[in-house]
Image (tube, rainbow, N blue to C red; front, side):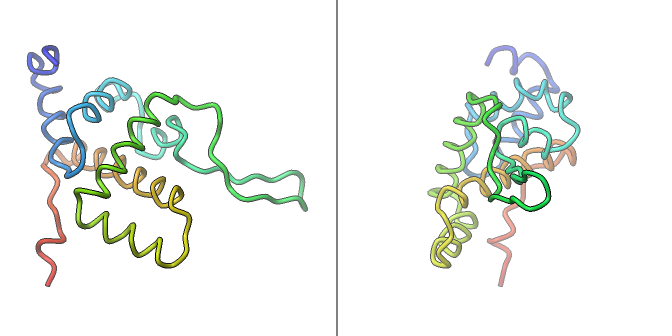
Length: 143
């Protein structure tokens, strides 16, 4: 943590990431470390793929098709931390909580929904860092 406090760019990105409700200190530090301060990955989708959160279609030839699955060749450490972040965000972020409840009521798989929320969190982190402004919770502005 001392390294982040001493470096202005790391400190700025840390503050931007923690502005997202449901993202804490550990998740922000892990994202900064694994993305090398958002330089290693061009887009959030590439980080999602690296972390094993992006599903890939299963297909053998032209006729045998299975359901989409996540790769087993992933960085499991970042995947665990991001999934725990998503579960925490479901509890503390009203927008994501409503989204989770709607999908579960429709009969969707709970873990699939957690995976989607994890992707949303990664996308939001990349967006605030790229934009350079803190996250704005649009739910409180909705009529």
